[in-house]
Image (cartoon, rainbow, N blue to C red; front, side):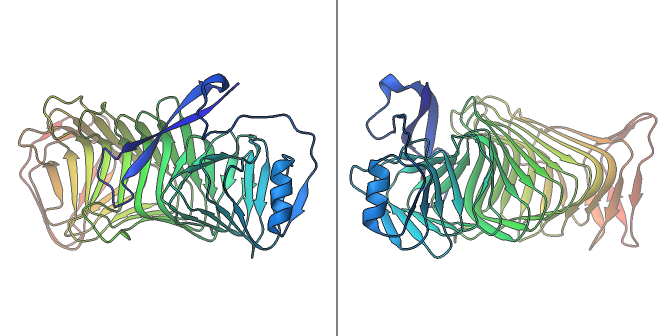
Length: 414
C-alpha cells in the first residue's frame, strides 16, 4: 500500500507571495514521515459531531463518516484523522485544521474548512464522487487524490494553492472562486477539470499539466475567468497550458474562456525545468483575450537558449478566438521552442497589430496553417507581417469587416 509523500521547496516559477508548492510521489507506508498518515483498519460507525469533545472522540475512534453538523471545531496537536474517513462539514459549521498534513477518504458539505498551518489536506482517496459548496481557506494547500470527481459549485477556495493530483474536479453551476489551481501536478499524476455550467474564476493562476504532470480541462459550457486578484498583474493571473515540464490540454466546445491577465501560455518552462507541451483545441464557444498588454504565446518556451524546447499548438475547428486591440497573439515563443496554429474552422477575431510572429524572438519557429477558418478584422484595421500556409483543398477567408487589412507576410501553399 502507498500514500503520497509531500516535499516543500521554494517556488521555481513566478507566483505571488504564496511562493511555495508541493512535490508529490508515491512511497511505501514503511517510509512515510511522521507528518503523514498511516492507514488503519476501523469498524467504527458514522458520527455526527457539534462539540469539540465529540470530534475528539470520533477522531480517536477512527470513526467514518465524521459529519461536522454544527459548531466551530478544531483538529489540533497530534490528532490524526483516519485516512479512510469520509469527512463532511455542514453549512453553518466550521472545522479548522492546525496540525500537519491530513488525509481523508472523501470531503463534502457547505461549511468552512480552514487549514491554518503550512500543511496539505489530501482528499478523496476513497475514489468516490462528492460535492463541496463551502469555503476552503487558510495558509495551507489542498490536494485532490483518488479517481472520483469533486464537484465544487459555489465553493470559495481561498487557501494557498489547490492541486488535482488524481481524478477530477467539476464546475456545473453557480459562482466558484479559486485562487490558484494546478490540474495534473507532478510526474505520474493525471488530473482533469470539467466545466459545464456556471462561472469559475481564478485570481492567481490556472496551470494545466504542471511540473511533469498531465492535465486536461474540458469546457463544454459555463464561463472560466482568469483575472488578476493578487495585486501584481506581472505575476497573475495566468493560464499556462503545459507548464514546467508538464503536458496540458484545454478542450473548449462551448461556453466562454475570459483571459485578462498579462501572460497566458502554451508550453512554458523556466529555469532548468524540462520542456512542456501545451495544446488548445477550440471546437466551439468563445475565448476572449482582453486587458492592457495581455498576451497569448503559443510555444512560450524558456528564456535560456540551452533549456529544453517546449511546444504549443492551437487547433481551431469552430468557435471564436477573440484578440482585442491592445492585446497580442504570438505564434511562437522564445529561442527554439515551437508554435503551431491550425485555423481549420471557426473565426479568429483580431485587428490592429495584435497578430505577431515571435515573443522576444527575432527568429521564431512557428506554423500558421489556414485550413478553412475565417480571420475577421475587429476594432481597427489589421496590420501584420506573419507568414501563413494555405492548406491544400481548403478555402479560408479574411473578412476585413469594413476596417481593412495589410498583410506583408508570405502566404504560401496551394
